[in-house]
Image (cartoon, rainbow, N blue to C red; front, side, top):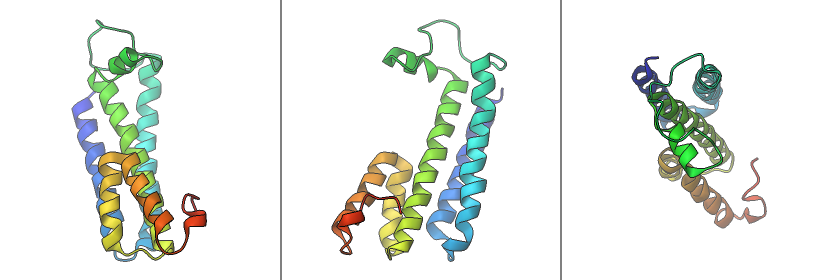
Amino acid sequence: MPWESIFGWTNSWAMLGWVILAFAPQRDKVLPYVFYMGCGLLALTYASLILPLMAGWIDDGGTASGPQPSLTTLAGVMALFSSPGGTTIGWIHYLAFDLFVGLWVARNADRHGYSRLVQIPILFFVLMAGPFGLLLYLILRATHKGRPENSTVPS
């Protein structure tokens, strides 16, 4: 498999989604496209790679030595990420879910009247450190605009 090419393509595709998310002038009209063409295409790419890889139909590009890949131990998770295929697929997982969370933050922030100047730094942290960016947004929602009662409800 051309893991380096897949890695580069998915990175570029996700970044295009993030740029549109942050700077689109009429966000409500483009968010469905970012959702389906961004998150959806990344999820499709992930699924089309993870299933054949787990079934042994495609090569992960790594070596056969070392601990067995597993989700139940630290060594096993490290083994999952020790090959080009495992790392690429894991990265696509992050890209898809971080973009999904970014979409939720942007839609929710728009709905509650937060300006783009407030949103862009939070979206940056969602992109760079997923859960930390989400936490920043939840704190913002809990402490501003008089909406603490539903600050963590994904509306």
